[in-house]
Image: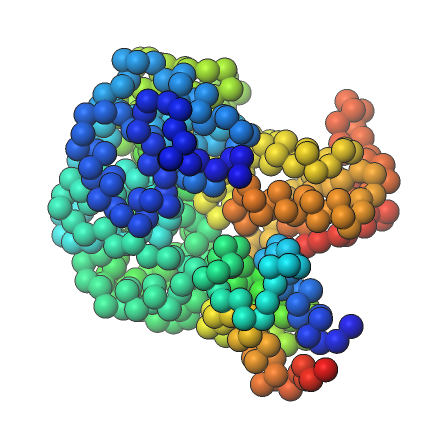
Length: 406
Length: 81
Protein backbone atom coordinates (compact mmCIF):
# COMPACT_ATOMS: atom_id res chain seq x y z
CA UNK A 1 0.00 0.00 0.00
CA UNK A 2 1.35 3.40 -0.91
CA UNK A 3 0.97 5.14 2.42
CA UNK A 4 2.22 2.40 4.68
CA UNK A 5 5.56 2.95 6.33
CA UNK A 6 7.64 -0.11 5.60
CA UNK A 7 10.77 -0.30 7.74
CA UNK A 8 12.25 -2.82 5.34
CA UNK A 9 12.18 -0.31 2.50
CA UNK A 10 14.11 2.58 4.01
CA UNK A 11 15.79 4.92 1.60
CA UNK A 12 16.82 7.37 4.30
CA UNK A 13 19.46 7.07 6.92
CA UNK A 14 17.44 7.68 10.02
CA UNK A 15 16.22 4.64 11.89
CA UNK A 16 12.47 4.28 11.60
CA UNK A 17 10.39 2.34 14.08
CA UNK A 18 6.74 1.66 13.33
CA UNK A 19 3.95 1.16 15.83
CA UNK A 20 3.42 -2.41 14.66
CA UNK A 21 6.93 -3.53 15.48
CA UNK A 22 7.13 -1.58 18.73
CA UNK A 23 3.78 -2.92 19.92
CA UNK A 24 5.16 -6.40 19.37
CA UNK A 25 8.47 -5.64 21.08
CA UNK A 26 8.63 -2.61 23.32
CA UNK A 27 12.36 -3.08 23.92
CA UNK A 28 12.96 -1.70 20.42
CA UNK A 29 12.04 1.75 21.70
CA UNK A 30 14.31 1.40 24.73
CA UNK A 31 17.12 0.37 22.46
CA UNK A 32 16.53 3.30 20.08
CA UNK A 33 16.37 5.77 22.97
CA UNK A 34 19.61 4.37 24.43
CA UNK A 35 21.56 4.73 21.24
CA UNK A 36 22.81 8.18 20.18
CA UNK A 37 21.32 8.13 16.68
CA UNK A 38 18.14 10.06 16.08
CA UNK A 39 15.18 7.87 15.24
CA UNK A 40 11.63 8.32 13.97
CA UNK A 41 8.66 6.54 15.52
CA UNK A 42 5.70 6.43 13.15
CA UNK A 43 2.34 4.78 12.68
CA UNK A 44 2.48 2.20 9.90
CA UNK A 45 -0.90 3.40 8.64
CA UNK A 46 -0.70 7.18 8.39
CA UNK A 47 -2.98 8.23 5.55
CA UNK A 48 -0.42 10.46 3.88
CA UNK A 49 0.44 10.69 0.22
CA UNK A 50 3.08 8.40 -1.16
CA UNK A 51 6.57 9.64 -0.43
CA UNK A 52 5.56 12.27 2.11
CA UNK A 53 7.34 10.52 4.98
CA UNK A 54 10.45 9.81 2.95
CA UNK A 55 10.75 13.44 1.87
CA UNK A 56 10.13 14.66 5.42
CA UNK A 57 12.84 12.43 6.85
CA UNK A 58 15.28 13.60 4.23
CA UNK A 59 14.54 17.23 5.11
CA UNK A 60 15.71 16.91 8.71
CA UNK A 61 19.10 18.67 8.94
CA UNK A 62 22.20 16.55 9.60
CA UNK A 63 22.90 18.36 12.87
CA UNK A 64 19.80 16.63 14.23
CA UNK A 65 21.25 13.19 13.52
CA UNK A 66 21.99 12.46 17.17
CA UNK A 67 20.07 12.86 20.41
CA UNK A 68 16.68 13.55 18.85
CA UNK A 69 13.51 11.72 17.91
CA UNK A 70 10.79 12.39 15.37
CA UNK A 71 7.05 11.83 15.67
CA UNK A 72 4.28 12.37 13.16
CA UNK A 73 1.42 14.71 13.99
CA UNK A 74 -1.29 16.65 12.26
CA UNK A 75 0.25 19.66 13.98
CA UNK A 76 -1.31 22.89 15.08
CA UNK A 77 -2.64 23.62 11.60
CA UNK A 78 -4.15 20.21 10.95
CA UNK A 79 -1.68 19.51 8.16
CA UNK A 80 0.86 16.71 8.56
CA UNK A 81 4.06 17.48 10.38
CA UNK A 82 7.05 15.42 11.31
CA UNK A 83 8.00 16.94 14.64
CA UNK A 84 11.54 16.60 15.94
CA UNK A 85 12.21 16.71 19.66
CA UNK A 86 15.40 16.73 21.68
CA UNK A 87 15.64 13.76 24.02
CA UNK A 88 17.17 15.86 26.78
CA UNK A 89 14.20 18.27 26.65
CA UNK A 90 11.70 15.42 26.73
CA UNK A 91 13.43 13.92 29.74
CA UNK A 92 13.40 17.33 31.43
CA UNK A 93 9.65 17.80 31.01
CA UNK A 94 9.08 14.31 32.35
CA UNK A 95 10.82 15.37 35.56
CA UNK A 96 8.75 18.55 35.78
CA UNK A 97 5.54 16.58 35.36
CA UNK A 98 6.63 13.89 37.79
CA UNK A 99 7.03 16.53 40.48
CA UNK A 100 3.97 18.66 39.67
CA UNK A 101 1.63 15.70 39.46
CA UNK A 102 3.16 14.04 42.53
CA UNK A 103 3.65 10.90 40.47
CA UNK A 104 6.06 9.31 42.94
CA UNK A 105 3.56 6.73 44.24
CA UNK A 106 2.60 5.58 40.74
CA UNK A 107 4.03 2.13 40.05
CA UNK A 108 2.64 1.46 36.59
CA UNK A 109 1.03 3.21 33.68
CA UNK A 110 -1.70 1.72 31.48
CA UNK A 111 -1.34 2.47 27.81
CA UNK A 112 -4.73 3.03 26.15
CA UNK A 113 -3.67 5.33 23.32
CA UNK A 114 -1.39 4.75 20.34
CA UNK A 115 2.18 5.04 21.54
CA UNK A 116 3.06 7.16 18.51
CA UNK A 117 0.98 9.98 20.04
CA UNK A 118 3.38 12.45 21.59
CA UNK A 119 1.21 12.52 24.73
CA UNK A 120 1.46 8.75 25.25
CA UNK A 121 5.07 8.60 24.16
CA UNK A 122 6.39 11.22 26.57
CA UNK A 123 3.81 11.14 29.37
CA UNK A 124 3.73 7.38 29.61
CA UNK A 125 6.50 5.51 27.86
CA UNK A 126 9.32 7.94 28.61
CA UNK A 127 8.04 8.63 32.11
CA UNK A 128 7.89 4.87 32.83
CA UNK A 129 11.38 4.42 31.45
CA UNK A 130 12.87 7.32 33.43
CA UNK A 131 11.32 6.25 36.69
CA UNK A 132 11.61 2.50 36.35
CA UNK A 133 7.84 2.04 36.28
CA UNK A 134 5.93 -0.66 34.47
CA UNK A 135 4.24 0.28 31.19
CA UNK A 136 1.24 -1.98 30.68
CA UNK A 137 0.13 -2.31 27.06
CA UNK A 138 -3.59 -2.80 26.57
CA UNK A 139 -5.92 -2.99 23.58
CA UNK A 140 -7.91 -0.18 25.18
CA UNK A 141 -11.60 -0.10 24.43
CA UNK A 142 -11.08 -2.53 21.56
CA UNK A 143 -10.92 -5.24 24.23
CA UNK A 144 -12.96 -4.00 27.20
CA UNK A 145 -12.92 -7.35 28.96
CA UNK A 146 -9.13 -7.40 29.06
CA UNK A 147 -9.13 -3.78 30.18
CA UNK A 148 -11.63 -4.38 32.96
CA UNK A 149 -9.58 -7.29 34.28
CA UNK A 150 -6.39 -5.25 34.23
CA UNK A 151 -7.99 -2.24 35.93
CA UNK A 152 -9.59 -4.47 38.50
CA UNK A 153 -6.37 -6.20 39.49
CA UNK A 154 -3.98 -3.28 39.46
CA UNK A 155 -2.70 -1.06 42.22
CA UNK A 156 -0.97 2.33 42.22
CA UNK A 157 -1.58 2.83 38.53
CA UNK A 158 -1.88 5.78 36.16
CA UNK A 159 -4.23 6.10 33.19
CA UNK A 160 -3.79 8.64 30.41
CA UNK A 161 -6.88 9.14 28.27
CA UNK A 162 -8.25 11.55 25.74
CA UNK A 163 -11.42 13.47 26.59
CA UNK A 164 -13.62 11.50 24.23
CA UNK A 165 -12.87 8.24 26.03
CA UNK A 166 -14.54 9.43 29.24
CA UNK A 167 -18.02 8.87 27.82
CA UNK A 168 -17.11 5.28 26.94
CA UNK A 169 -16.13 4.30 30.49
CA UNK A 170 -19.62 4.18 32.04
CA UNK A 171 -21.00 2.54 28.91
CA UNK A 172 -18.49 -0.25 29.24
CA UNK A 173 -18.11 -0.61 32.98
CA UNK A 174 -21.35 0.79 34.42
CA UNK A 175 -21.03 1.57 38.11
CA UNK A 176 -17.86 -0.45 38.69
CA UNK A 177 -15.08 1.14 40.71
CA UNK A 178 -11.35 0.78 40.17
CA UNK A 179 -9.51 1.87 43.26
CA UNK A 180 -6.11 0.84 41.90
CA UNK A 181 -6.00 3.87 39.63
CA UNK A 182 -4.43 6.75 41.54
CA UNK A 183 -3.73 9.18 38.70
CA UNK A 184 -6.07 9.90 35.80
CA UNK A 185 -4.93 12.28 33.07
CA UNK A 186 -6.90 13.71 30.17
CA UNK A 187 -5.49 15.44 27.12
CA UNK A 188 -6.33 15.60 23.44
CA UNK A 189 -9.46 17.68 23.03
CA UNK A 190 -12.09 19.00 25.33
CA UNK A 191 -11.77 17.99 28.98
CA UNK A 192 -14.76 15.78 29.97
CA UNK A 193 -15.91 18.05 32.79
CA UNK A 194 -19.50 16.80 32.53
CA UNK A 195 -18.32 13.27 33.38
CA UNK A 196 -16.22 14.31 36.35
CA UNK A 197 -18.62 13.16 39.09
CA UNK A 198 -18.90 9.77 37.47
CA UNK A 199 -15.14 9.53 36.93
CA UNK A 200 -14.57 10.26 40.60
CA UNK A 201 -16.97 7.48 41.55
CA UNK A 202 -15.35 5.04 39.13
CA UNK A 203 -11.81 5.95 40.22
CA UNK A 204 -12.29 6.93 43.87
CA UNK A 205 -8.57 7.03 44.67
CA UNK A 206 -7.48 8.94 41.57
CA UNK A 207 -6.19 12.47 41.33
CA UNK A 208 -7.65 13.70 38.03
CA UNK A 209 -5.94 16.25 35.80
CA UNK A 210 -6.70 18.18 32.66
CA UNK A 211 -3.59 18.40 30.50
CA UNK A 212 -3.23 20.69 27.55
CA UNK A 213 -0.57 20.79 24.90
CA UNK A 214 0.35 19.71 21.40
CA UNK A 215 3.03 17.72 19.65
CA UNK A 216 5.06 20.87 18.99
CA UNK A 217 5.17 21.40 22.77
CA UNK A 218 6.47 17.82 23.23
CA UNK A 219 3.76 17.60 24.48
CA UNK A 220 2.53 19.54 27.49
CA UNK A 221 1.91 23.20 28.19
CA UNK A 222 -0.51 23.48 31.10
CA UNK A 223 -1.95 21.48 33.95
CA UNK A 224 -5.24 21.81 35.79
CA UNK A 225 -6.36 19.63 38.69
CA UNK A 226 -9.86 18.65 37.59
CA UNK A 227 -11.67 20.39 40.46
CA UNK A 228 -9.77 23.65 40.06
CA UNK A 229 -12.46 24.82 37.64
CA UNK A 230 -15.99 23.93 36.58
CA UNK A 231 -15.30 24.74 32.95
CA UNK A 232 -14.19 22.13 30.43
CA UNK A 233 -12.45 24.90 28.54
CA UNK A 234 -10.22 25.85 31.46
CA UNK A 235 -6.77 24.43 30.72
CA UNK A 236 -5.20 25.64 33.95
CA UNK A 237 -1.84 27.30 34.34
CA UNK A 238 1.35 26.91 32.31
CA UNK A 239 3.98 24.46 33.49
CA UNK A 240 7.11 26.04 35.05
CA UNK A 241 9.23 27.72 32.41
CA UNK A 242 6.47 27.82 29.80
CA UNK A 243 4.99 31.10 28.59
CA UNK A 244 1.62 31.46 26.89
CA UNK A 245 0.50 34.44 24.85
CA UNK A 246 -2.16 35.33 22.33
CA UNK A 247 -1.82 37.05 19.01
CA UNK A 248 -4.00 39.97 18.00
CA UNK A 249 -6.63 37.57 16.69
CA UNK A 250 -6.67 35.64 19.95
CA UNK A 251 -4.74 32.62 18.74
CA UNK A 252 -2.83 30.93 21.52
CA UNK A 253 0.93 30.50 21.18
CA UNK A 254 3.63 29.27 23.53
CA UNK A 255 7.33 29.48 24.28
CA UNK A 256 8.77 26.46 26.06
CA UNK A 257 12.23 25.12 26.97
CA UNK A 258 10.80 21.65 26.34
CA UNK A 259 9.38 22.33 22.90
CA UNK A 260 10.22 20.58 19.65
CA UNK A 261 13.40 21.81 18.00
CA UNK A 262 11.74 21.87 14.63
CA UNK A 263 9.40 20.16 12.26
CA UNK A 264 8.94 19.27 8.64
CA UNK A 265 5.72 20.30 6.94
CA UNK A 266 4.68 21.04 3.37
CA UNK A 267 7.19 23.90 3.29
CA UNK A 268 10.12 21.73 4.36
CA UNK A 269 12.21 21.98 7.53
CA UNK A 270 11.16 24.68 9.99
CA UNK A 271 13.54 25.12 12.90
CA UNK A 272 11.98 26.44 16.12
CA UNK A 273 14.14 29.10 17.74
CA UNK A 274 14.29 28.80 21.49
CA UNK A 275 13.07 32.40 21.88
CA UNK A 276 10.18 32.03 19.43
CA UNK A 277 6.49 31.71 20.18
CA UNK A 278 4.78 28.78 18.45
CA UNK A 279 1.11 28.76 17.46
CA UNK A 280 -1.12 26.09 18.99
CA UNK A 281 -3.98 26.36 16.49
CA UNK A 282 -6.40 27.14 19.34
CA UNK A 283 -7.99 30.37 20.40
CA UNK A 284 -7.82 31.25 24.08
CA UNK A 285 -7.94 34.03 26.64
CA UNK A 286 -6.18 34.63 29.93
CA UNK A 287 -8.37 34.21 33.01
CA UNK A 288 -7.93 34.87 36.69
CA UNK A 289 -5.16 33.27 38.79
CA UNK A 290 -2.96 32.72 35.74
CA UNK A 291 -5.35 30.27 34.16
CA UNK A 292 -6.22 30.10 30.48
CA UNK A 293 -9.58 29.44 28.84
CA UNK A 294 -9.89 27.95 25.36
CA UNK A 295 -12.42 29.63 23.11
CA UNK A 296 -12.39 27.70 19.88
CA UNK A 297 -10.47 26.05 17.11
CA UNK A 298 -9.52 26.92 13.61
CA UNK A 299 -12.23 26.20 11.05
CA UNK A 300 -12.32 22.64 9.75
CA UNK A 301 -9.86 21.33 12.27
CA UNK A 302 -11.20 19.75 15.40
CA UNK A 303 -10.58 16.97 17.88
CA UNK A 304 -12.65 13.83 17.64
CA UNK A 305 -12.13 11.14 20.27
CA UNK A 306 -8.81 12.81 20.99
CA UNK A 307 -7.57 12.78 17.41
CA UNK A 308 -7.11 15.96 15.47
CA UNK A 309 -9.29 15.82 12.39
CA UNK A 310 -8.38 18.04 9.47
CA UNK A 311 -11.21 17.83 6.96
CA UNK A 312 -9.23 19.27 4.01
CA UNK A 313 -6.57 16.61 4.49
CA UNK A 314 -9.15 13.83 4.44
CA UNK A 315 -10.91 15.19 1.36
CA UNK A 316 -7.63 15.48 -0.46
CA UNK A 317 -6.93 11.79 0.14
CA UNK A 318 -10.31 10.90 -1.38
CA UNK A 319 -9.74 12.79 -4.63
CA UNK A 320 -8.61 9.73 -6.61
CA UNK A 321 -12.03 8.17 -6.04
CA UNK A 322 -14.20 11.18 -6.76
CA UNK A 323 -14.01 13.33 -9.89
CA UNK A 324 -16.66 15.82 -8.77
CA UNK A 325 -16.90 18.44 -6.02
CA UNK A 326 -16.66 17.68 -2.31
CA UNK A 327 -17.95 19.75 0.57
CA UNK A 328 -18.63 19.12 4.22
CA UNK A 329 -20.49 20.35 7.21
CA UNK A 330 -19.93 19.59 10.86
CA UNK A 331 -22.23 17.72 13.17
CA UNK A 332 -21.96 15.97 16.54
CA UNK A 333 -22.46 12.24 16.85
CA UNK A 334 -24.55 10.32 19.42
CA UNK A 335 -21.77 10.65 22.01
CA UNK A 336 -21.56 14.41 21.57
CA UNK A 337 -18.24 14.23 19.69
CA UNK A 338 -17.65 16.60 16.81
CA UNK A 339 -17.72 14.96 13.40
CA UNK A 340 -18.37 15.88 9.80
CA UNK A 341 -20.61 14.89 6.93
CA UNK A 342 -19.07 14.46 3.47
CA UNK A 343 -21.20 15.83 0.63
CA UNK A 344 -20.48 14.87 -2.97
CA UNK A 345 -21.66 16.71 -6.06
CA UNK A 346 -23.15 15.69 -8.45
CA UNK A 347 -25.16 12.72 -7.20
CA UNK A 348 -22.85 9.74 -6.80
CA UNK A 349 -23.26 6.16 -7.87
CA UNK A 350 -22.94 3.29 -5.41
CA UNK A 351 -19.74 2.20 -7.16
CA UNK A 352 -18.20 5.62 -6.60
CA UNK A 353 -19.23 5.67 -2.96
CA UNK A 354 -17.76 2.22 -2.53
CA UNK A 355 -14.44 3.47 -3.91
CA UNK A 356 -14.47 6.33 -1.39
CA UNK A 357 -15.22 3.96 1.48
CA UNK A 358 -12.36 1.75 0.39
CA UNK A 359 -9.97 4.71 0.58
CA UNK A 360 -11.28 5.72 4.00
CA UNK A 361 -10.66 2.26 5.36
CA UNK A 362 -7.21 2.04 3.78
CA UNK A 363 -5.90 5.41 4.90
CA UNK A 364 -7.72 6.51 8.04
CA UNK A 365 -8.88 5.22 11.38
CA UNK A 366 -12.61 5.25 12.04
CA UNK A 367 -12.60 8.50 13.99
CA UNK A 368 -11.53 10.26 10.76
CA UNK A 369 -14.36 8.77 8.72
CA UNK A 370 -17.33 11.05 7.96
CA UNK A 371 -20.50 10.48 9.93
CA UNK A 372 -22.35 10.17 6.64
CA UNK A 373 -21.73 10.36 2.91
CA UNK A 374 -24.39 12.32 1.05
CA UNK A 375 -24.64 13.77 -2.42
CA UNK A 376 -26.48 16.67 -4.01
CA UNK A 377 -27.14 17.79 -7.59
CA UNK A 378 -25.59 21.20 -6.86
CA UNK A 379 -23.66 22.60 -3.91
CA UNK A 380 -25.24 25.75 -2.46
CA UNK A 381 -22.70 28.55 -2.28
CA UNK A 382 -22.05 31.60 -0.14
CA UNK A 383 -21.46 35.00 -1.70
CA UNK A 384 -17.71 34.38 -1.59
CA UNK A 385 -18.12 31.23 -3.68
CA UNK A 386 -17.48 28.83 -0.85
CA UNK A 387 -19.96 26.06 0.02
CA UNK A 388 -22.73 27.15 2.35
CA UNK A 389 -22.73 24.57 5.13
CA UNK A 390 -25.93 25.88 6.71
CA UNK A 391 -27.95 25.40 3.52
CA UNK A 392 -26.14 22.16 2.73
CA UNK A 393 -27.12 20.71 6.10
CA UNK A 394 -30.82 21.13 5.36
CA UNK A 395 -30.79 20.63 1.61
CA UNK A 396 -33.93 18.57 0.78
CA UNK A 397 -32.36 17.28 -2.43
CA UNK A 398 -29.68 15.32 -0.57
CA UNK A 399 -29.27 11.58 -1.04
CA UNK A 400 -27.71 9.64 1.81
CA UNK A 401 -25.42 6.84 0.60
CA UNK A 402 -23.75 5.60 3.78
CA UNK A 403 -23.69 6.37 7.49
CA UNK A 404 -21.22 5.38 10.17
CA UNK A 405 -23.84 4.54 12.84
CA UNK A 406 -22.07 6.23 15.76
CA UNK B 1 -33.77 -9.91 1.08
CA UNK B 2 -33.41 -12.66 3.70
CA UNK B 3 -32.37 -11.88 7.26
CA UNK B 4 -29.00 -13.47 6.57
CA UNK B 5 -28.45 -11.16 3.59
CA UNK B 6 -29.66 -8.19 5.61
CA UNK B 7 -27.20 -8.99 8.39
CA UNK B 8 -24.35 -9.44 5.93
CA UNK B 9 -25.11 -6.11 4.26
CA UNK B 10 -25.16 -4.35 7.63
CA UNK B 11 -21.84 -5.87 8.73
CA UNK B 12 -20.19 -5.03 5.40
CA UNK B 13 -21.36 -1.42 5.77
CA UNK B 14 -20.38 -1.04 9.43
CA UNK B 15 -16.89 -2.45 8.98
CA UNK B 16 -16.31 -1.26 5.39
CA UNK B 17 -15.60 -4.78 4.19
CA UNK B 18 -15.31 -5.97 0.63
CA UNK B 19 -17.98 -8.53 -0.21
CA UNK B 20 -15.21 -10.99 -0.96
CA UNK B 21 -13.80 -10.58 2.56
CA UNK B 22 -17.05 -11.38 4.25
CA UNK B 23 -17.67 -14.65 6.05
CA UNK B 24 -19.77 -15.36 9.12
CA UNK B 25 -16.74 -17.21 10.49
CA UNK B 26 -14.79 -13.92 10.53
CA UNK B 27 -13.39 -13.25 14.02
CA UNK B 28 -13.17 -9.83 15.66
CA UNK B 29 -9.38 -9.94 15.68
CA UNK B 30 -9.36 -10.43 11.92
CA UNK B 31 -11.33 -7.26 11.19
CA UNK B 32 -9.09 -4.19 11.47
CA UNK B 33 -12.06 -1.82 11.61
CA UNK B 34 -13.69 -3.65 14.56
CA UNK B 35 -12.37 -1.11 17.04
CA UNK B 36 -14.09 0.56 20.00
CA UNK B 37 -16.13 2.90 17.79
CA UNK B 38 -16.86 -0.10 15.61
CA UNK B 39 -18.53 -1.76 18.60
CA UNK B 40 -20.83 1.27 18.93
CA UNK B 41 -21.57 1.23 15.19
CA UNK B 42 -22.34 -2.48 15.34
CA UNK B 43 -24.83 -2.00 18.17
CA UNK B 44 -26.56 0.80 16.24
CA UNK B 45 -26.52 -1.29 13.06
CA UNK B 46 -28.21 -4.20 14.85
CA UNK B 47 -30.94 -1.91 16.14
CA UNK B 48 -31.44 -0.23 12.78
CA UNK B 49 -31.60 -3.47 10.81
CA UNK B 50 -33.40 -5.77 13.23
CA UNK B 51 -35.02 -3.50 15.80
CA UNK B 52 -33.19 -5.10 18.68
CA UNK B 53 -31.62 -2.64 21.14
CA UNK B 54 -28.21 -4.18 21.73
CA UNK B 55 -26.84 -3.25 25.15
CA UNK B 56 -23.17 -2.12 25.28
CA UNK B 57 -22.07 -5.20 27.23
CA UNK B 58 -23.73 -7.45 24.65
CA UNK B 59 -22.02 -5.64 21.79
CA UNK B 60 -18.70 -5.84 23.61
CA UNK B 61 -19.03 -9.57 24.13
CA UNK B 62 -19.40 -10.31 20.41
CA UNK B 63 -16.30 -12.01 19.10
CA UNK B 64 -17.30 -12.99 15.56
CA UNK B 65 -19.97 -12.34 12.95
CA UNK B 66 -21.41 -15.73 13.87
CA UNK B 67 -21.82 -14.39 17.43
CA UNK B 68 -23.92 -11.53 16.02
CA UNK B 69 -26.13 -13.97 14.16
CA UNK B 70 -26.55 -16.18 17.24
CA UNK B 71 -27.37 -13.21 19.45
CA UNK B 72 -30.16 -12.22 17.07
CA UNK B 73 -31.40 -15.82 16.86
CA UNK B 74 -31.70 -15.86 20.64
CA UNK B 75 -33.85 -12.75 20.33
CA UNK B 76 -36.23 -14.60 18.04
CA UNK B 77 -34.94 -13.53 14.64
CA UNK B 78 -34.84 -16.45 12.26
CA UNK B 79 -31.97 -17.00 9.86
CA UNK B 80 -33.35 -20.19 8.39
CA UNK B 81 -33.28 -19.82 4.60
